Image (cartoon, rainbow over all chains, first blue to last red; front, side):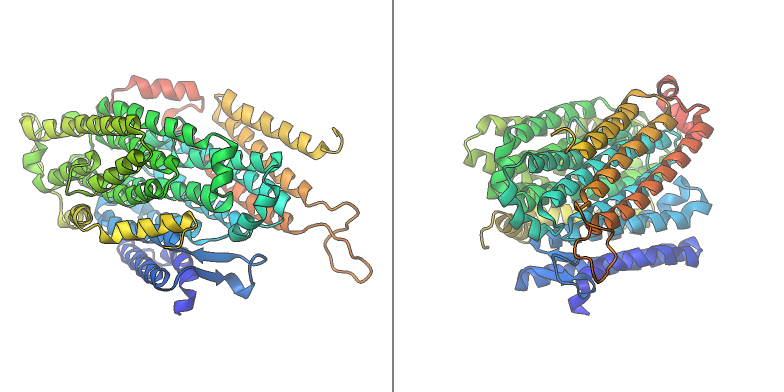
Length: 492
Length: 126
């Protein structure tokens, strides 16, 4: 059983999805999905323990030895990502049942869980597999279910957002497919480990260069790097709130993982950072993304829009850490990956609770909500503080590592820009605080009650994690550091 | 030189035509047509690189030693299925967009979205 954990991680949610259709009753399906997702979480914990204790796990699918057969390869980076995805998925699912009651018509509830599990499968698969073509297939599994999930939003603009995401996402995935094809043409292999050994021989050819550029652009479309982010704000704002909470915390993280995996493991550090000016390019795009997305966030009136723009800015931080291409920089990126997943899932879950009570998340409807829904709004404020990077929250830890990595290189102007980005975050978080706590409730509005416990429990679990991992950083920093060192080829 | 890369030229032309349609056309169905063309060009690319000069179809026989590479065919079979799923999903989205907006022209949809104020529209939907 233990030996088969890598494949079980992916296959259990995949098999569970069609079973949901047989169970039919929405409540039963919810419980079943929760158990399945919890099981995936358990497996990811076991995998991470195994990787830390005894190094890389290589699993041969169907007993065919790599590079001919498909290999699932789990190292620290994979295990870390698997843990983040399955943990967030499980916590978010707790609130799903109540939240979709008001946002999705009852006859679609079962289908919602089917798509949710398929999307989870796709993301887990992308991370677990060690085969380049497999990545494409899982990417499309998760994306296709994502388009359908977003289209379930009750606002009609959800349809339009989903369509736009579909066009952009398909172009991105097809770009990756072209890149993978070109690599296969040059090396005759699809196994990531094998590719990394064979690519250096043909690294000077134009074909490999083209493959690299196609893959980078394709991945950047998926991770919504500025200026390829245009699909993201509407998709996050109009999707059902639960879907937003899940995707904001995981979908772009998976794309960041792909970026790291392709640049560091497949093409290798020296190729990736010398053939095109990746460092200055990503540094510039990351910084422009931080500033422009944060400023856009300030001007939003729909709070889900506001935090969607903030997500684009946070992706900018991860890209800046990545572009430093030092162990500390990459550690900062991986830490921020973990931390941002905690903050954004907490914030979007809290917004789901607001949506549940109010029916919308327009800023001018939140007047006085700090007194009516104190626990929910407090969660948004703490999540917001974490976004800004206040000490004792996780946001501080990753920003600290990022600034340290920048100062190591002596790039203090960039560090200053990072801090300016944090100040912009203060402004958009303050807008919410001001409306919710310092404005009297509107006279013509019926006061609302605090959100039900099925929201508050997962929200506060995440908020406590936000604070806990901001104080006790041993786990997250250790895993991120070891993963970064492995990627740089240093033995931890 | 030109003829040697014949397959690549065809693939790149199809790819660019497809991509151009996706970008330039405002009609949602036409966009999907472009997207499908774009995807298909990549399928053709994969299939063409599988060809081994002088090789036959990859069916095991005693007196033949040189076969074409069957792996890209298998890969692209998967990709075709993915492509069909994408097209089907995109078309069904267009049907629902038509029901909700009464149009499938991008400009018209954006005009309608910008016209109605945010809160009123959400109230109407729920």
